[in-house]
Amino acid sequence: MKEKGMEPFGEALEDFYNGKKKAEITLIRDDGLEFNVPIEYFFRSPKDFSNLEKEAIRLCKGKVLDMGAGVGPHSLELQRLGLEVYAIDISSHACEIMKKRGVKNVQCTDFYNLTTDSFDTILLLGRSIGFVGNLEGIKKFLSYCKTRLNPEGIIILDSIDIRLTQEQIHLNFQERNRKLGKYIGEASFQMKYNNILGDKFHNVQIDPDTLNEITQELGLPCKILCKEEDGMYLAKIST
Image 1 (cartoon, rainbow, N blue to C red):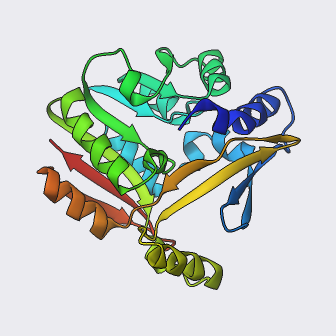
Image 2: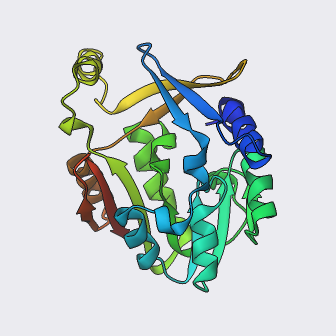
């Protein structure tokens, strides 16, 4: 995903940081469905983390890469706990805000262009794994992770089991994907904020069974650690 697709998000983050506390972005799916997301969610403190997030933080060890770090809520907590944290995001606005908030090691880049050496933990929360775009992107990403992890390194990620939805509009979307020969969790989105409309980007939400199939194919042990009622789950992948 290129930064142009994140431009509305970055502008909204900056507005919120500068005092516009009602700022929100609109996500537009390629079937026309729109979601409004309050920006205050991305600035939440550790006391507002979900149980899933708290467990993910607890599992982090050694040198941690926080991918899609946003404005750094998880990086800041990991730093507070004494871990060596490196935060990356493709949004220049997000990266500048992270630095101002006290995240020590910030790079405005994607994973494949990251200059820092290997890690003990690669962390992807907020469903950041979705930005790899599709199932082939997940395979490529996990394969590359093996080259950037130290011995006994781990990947911690969350996603959502979209098979559990009961909403007809989502079921219709999944059926459309099947007819197109696509995985049901793949979608294209645009972000909108004020008069700014970002470029279209691809996203994927992967169910735990499909994730397990991919990790087995790659020879990476995967354990689903916890699941929530809404379908959100946390996975730990070992090297």
